[in-house]
Length: 118
Image (cartoon, rainbow, N blue to C red):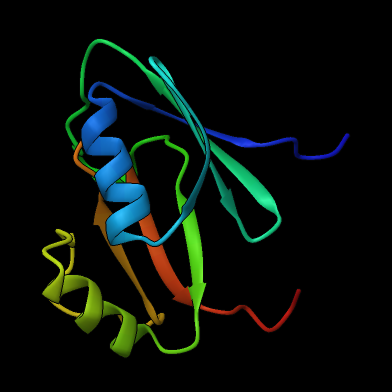
């Protein structure tokens, strides 16, 4: 098997377009009424329209899927993203050099410095 694409469910396509393209800088390659496809570093991120958002809950103790975005400096990316108004679950990056943030729909993602063992 091979990873085909990443899919995220959202309940507002206008907000999804704003968050993923304007705030995170992903390029839109297809826009339909109930679907947006973004090109992102050789992969496709697909957002599909759903009915409800999800509460973050007990983030690190509940089963979930988390997208982790590699950054050169967690501190710098954290600062820049906070300035754009992106909400984080941490007051500052953790000792493990990552920080979790939330999209407008309750999907949790992280920024992290590249893992060296891959």
